Length: 310
Ligand SMILES: NC(=O)c1ccc[n+]([C@@H]2O[C@H](COP(=O)([O-])OP(=O)(O)OC[C@H]3O[C@@H](n4cnc5c(N)ncnc54)[C@H](O)[C@@H]3O)[C@@H](O)[C@H]2O)c1
Image 1 (spheres, helix red, strand yellow):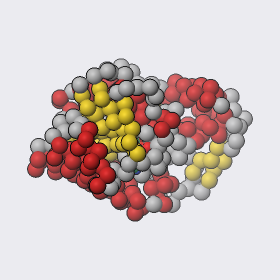
Image 2: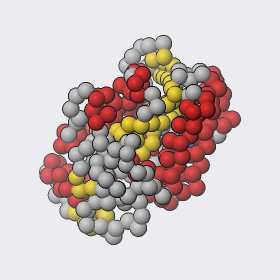
Image 3: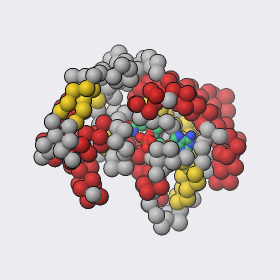
Image 4: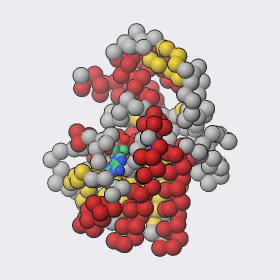
């Protein structure tokens, strides 16, 4: 029996991970989430090996009793304030997440956790210096609070390993989308607008590029990393390496859904909208051992999900 704690497990990626992990009867999964952006509806029901506790991981008193009682073997620390606009508008709340990272690592050290998996972000690379962005080579030049916090989280993981021997794996997530993602993120936002035939707003000329990783690819890679001893101490980019402009994404969504939406260009964002992003996913591809889901396929799956749900 492996006891697993997922913080932020009622969110988009955490809930997909929880769903996958509880399929295995030998996994005992506890999700801790404050439901600030997550929702209980994203978690499967009727699973005896899945429990949920509503709590703020940044509050040491609450989280201590939860971790001590569950005594996890593995922790996936995914709880964070997320979303470009939300993180730009709430920098102090974002910085407060440093407490959660410290809490989790300190408790992991004290309770004999075997490994902590930390969700960092492509944002740590800041403005692109080279493409593709490689885990161990590309310089990190992040400045915005969200990215700085993720970078500090990575430093904390390395420091706890160095001083206390606590094993870790750092996942640098690049844009990951899925049916349970909120419209704070670009792909679900564009898709929901397209299905309603509403105008799709693109910041600036839309020439900024991103890659889009379907959530099952993310989860398969992270679960494989949990099962592989060779990943300990590594940083792993988790994303897609098919780079496309935001304008092309909007056009692709309109074409694939047969939408009558038109594209509206909005003023460029003052900050937080990096020109380019594209990871080197060599390590992830080795972990996952199958082709990644294409954006076209991902859009079709998401559109089918929204149509069924409405
Ligand atoms: N989705 C992406 O493209 C992406 C990209 C880079 C990094 N990430 C990182 O991956 C992780 C998961 O992101 P997501 O896309 O699933 O976002 P999400 O908003 O769906 O999930 C985050 C979850 O954390 C919870 N949460 C936030 N603060 C909390 C706190 N203090 N205590 C307890 N729960 C808290 C929220 O309620 C939510 O359920 C985050 O750490 C995020 O920074 C995601």
